[in-house]
Image (cartoon, rainbow, N blue to C red; front, side, top):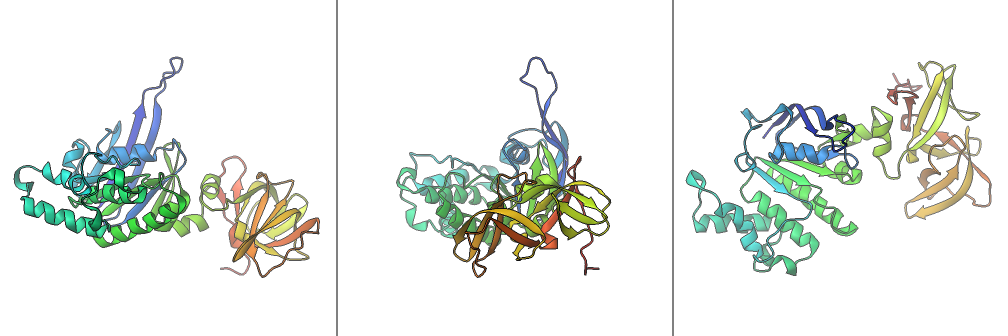
Length: 370
């Protein structure tokens, strides 16, 4: 099911008695969510991603704009008539009911032409329980299940009516790290098998990037960038997006361009063809450093953290806006911790320039590329 958000805006009255300006939670959101895709709504707390999900679900009404499911305008439809499945952060299972009864519950509320026989309801319940791999737990109650199993029950309950759109509001935040990894892989598997258009809200960029077909990065109610996860990571449109995506986070420096050469401090670190002389913010991904004894970029060495396949070189640079500079290199490259400084060359396509005032991306031509 294709979902179209058209000039979607949501305003809330200000709680500040001195200021009567409305709080804009979602500001003129335009996006067409392709049929059968998994979309990640991503951003920090307060960016408007959960409000957007609530508008799509019908739990809140937009101040302006329209919402379409396919050709159907659902803007004024109540949630129960939209054909959605909704999974909350806290699961919201009925503790006095068994797993089977929890999953059956939405089917028992169907009326009219949609009403099912007991046999049909049971058949659908067992089928969806097998899909999420909890068919052996149907007679247990939620209190007898682990957090991951409860999450699967919540997903099964949302899927049992085969909704047109599945909405997931930070569904993994209550799980430990290992379970989060396992469950996000299961969500991706289930979505691919059912081909239900799915919108997944999270503040965890690693979750969003790992399972989404497209990600939508939001800030203060405004969409910053939409694209495939790797494309957004490789080509951020502004400093906010560059800083929000990536683990470890991007290293940011104050720099300047003089005669098409990028300077960080006194170091001339990279040719940036086509960029006018100006002060800039410089973003360098942790994997954008190469150890080189005579490299142009010099930092004060603090230490080295070995992480199995890779090593993290931790250093300082007076032009850095981060407390430390973190560079990811292969463990095959040995760094002596006895030395005071470490030198790098930079990988051009891992270096991003941003306008000092607007923080918008400044694209430069990489030598050797057409």
